[in-house]
Length: 467
Image (tube, rainbow, N blue to C red):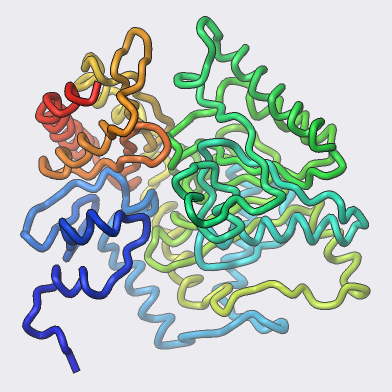
């Protein structure tokens, strides 16, 4: 029985839902923004307003909203085999084909033919949780039980389970949750614009970041460090691009100390950087890769963990002595998710969406720079592929931040929504992120940039009060 039949959806929401990553007090005061429909890169809210979604949801609706091919693939799978687990060696056709296809894509499109197996989950958080467990399992199996610590980076985002939330390097996600867990360490954030010393060029900054990492390893003891985890581009932190030669130098340090490299491609995978994977964009050599979001373009909750030969051989060689691999989820390799993922990959290839991201990447940066690049509060506009960030400062000349406790990027984001464009306010530094569907058009990018410029102009009096 509907006990709320005389209430609005807004009222029922406030009485019923605990929203993720939302201020309870603000939500109680303001209520939800309810979205009712979407197509392509556009959303429609309950008031009938159309908004350009320059976030692709949460970096995830890569092929755009309303794709009938994916709905049809899911419907057919639901009718044919609505569920099948993978426990005890059980399997199903689409999941087998998806694992094989991912291995092939990494070999062919990212120059990474060293992956041996794929493990499936349901979210980027649980993919990184799987990585957390795998690096411990691997070292236990090879007789290195002391080698357990994992190094992440300040400003990183790797999810919000207890383990992945610990790997995340953004304090807001740790507050009152007793995180990070023991055994998780954080090294410096390699964001040159904000954290470089005066006069320090990108090469010198990268060298210092790598030296900080190696110093942390030496302090803790290399024999205690199991893995280093990194996003190719630090998305939720603020769209931080790696400094030149940073990853090449990091990988030398990891190799020298027998430390696994976990690459979190939850955001960057499946075309976001203008290439299929950030692994290929930056020439990385991962031992584990975490995937989600663009795997199904968020039409189904699904993740994948790519496991290298290096790790797989230890697992396989010790299996008889160790027994079953005792990790998994009820929905690992779900047949409906696998069918949707295969259809999603077909669509990306058929419509050339990775190439479209590469082609429109300069357009996105140019549109933002042309329209707001001379604004006195815009410090930096950066990006790769269809992934860009606008960072705000109180003073461009000195890069002075806004007054503590203010949130200029949230002010601008609010005005942007009022102008009909969604640009996410990020939780680490004052940055608005842009990551539209890879199917977006040049005209839609220009339209979004125009709306955003109007929003920034409207926000100027409030921003001036935050200096």
